[in-house]
Length: 414
Image (tube, rainbow, N blue to C red; front, side, top):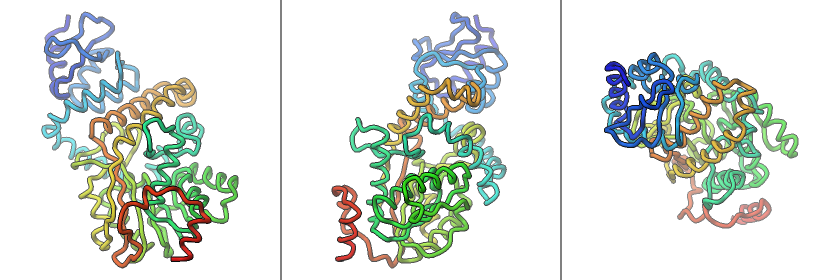
């Protein structure tokens, strides 16, 4: 049976987690499980040794993530359901942990500052792992952002195309318009805007692997003359454009650089252009997971809508439309996690089992966070104060898809 120290530690861990319906086991002895309040646990956490148990009591989130990645913790049962249960119950104890979480977040912000040099280092650690790794579980176009599911049964491939159309329609993108994209990933959206909407696109990214892949795709699709992929920081974007778009990059900008980001947008589209930012956010401010920042996404922070206003207000941008695609991201992550699990042996061969377990936890935890509302996915469409191309309604977002030729004719007759 548990020693008195074991019992004290497990009670402390469960209390920090808000007493979810889980069991704790030290070693392989199921008789030493400690379910909460004598109830039958929905899942059981198997902890390899007392040292790991003590670390969990001191720093639950980081210790849990590290121990799971290192194989010192196993989950018996549905991992996503387990994480959902813990995230829901931990909401009740979040205020008690806020001060410590803020202090650690400030320290991490200093270490992982998203300056021009810091951003390159942070992005390299995540996005330059290997294109072959991401090919294992992303869609065929390598889109690593939230998809848009017109129906729940839509495939991931179709949903990613629908997301790109959703973005272009919100922008009311027209043939021959000049677009700049900040943080272009592997280039799918830039190529889509050029091919399907007739736009001329300059796309910026500081990930060398992604830019090299995007340039190769542009050549393969015969779009190299219409899409320029630039390996450079968003702060160095220059030249007047009609449209600014950023999908999945704001999370990497950092709160202390939002006004700098807004200055870049204004320098690009002035008071007359249009824009859209698509980003992971929160309903209320709370420091981002220190374990994810440590092992997966250094320098990341999901902002609230109020915090994002720092991008728009200093430059008098008009916010035209705000949409929350929270459940679409949950659905996207379901697809990614299933594909990752199908390729987990290959991932382990490429990077080792510790890496594979860390990424499984990251994907499963992200899915659980979107399902429970801890994370949101916001799209904000905006325009310069003097922009005259503002629609009366939102009907243009849902109208039938038009060909490039049809849009050229409509644009020429306006």
